[in-house]
Image (cartoon, rainbow, N blue to C red; front, side, top):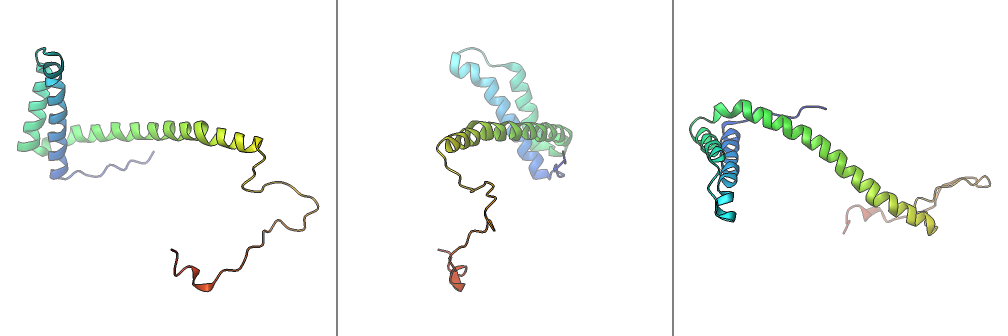
Length: 134
């Protein structure tokens, strides 16, 4: 896996700090808003720390940003494999199976020992068909 993590700018680090502070703030007040219980103190401390660091000293968030981006990169690698596998085995494979049962062969694959060539002759197009695509 090739790492594509670039050096974050101060703006990136500030955005990261404020975003993480906002997420932890939501986690902190969620029990109060939904269930009427007390707020989560640990989450409000994290929210305050991330928010303050994002506003006052964004460069201090660089190590946490790097770790977060590495985690995100690994999760992205895993998720893309899962999503593409589900798409292939959940959609394309059954579709190909049904088309095969119905006798549809869109690629016209097959071996014909009597054929001189497998070339499909197409009708000639006008020379300006590329100039006016629509």
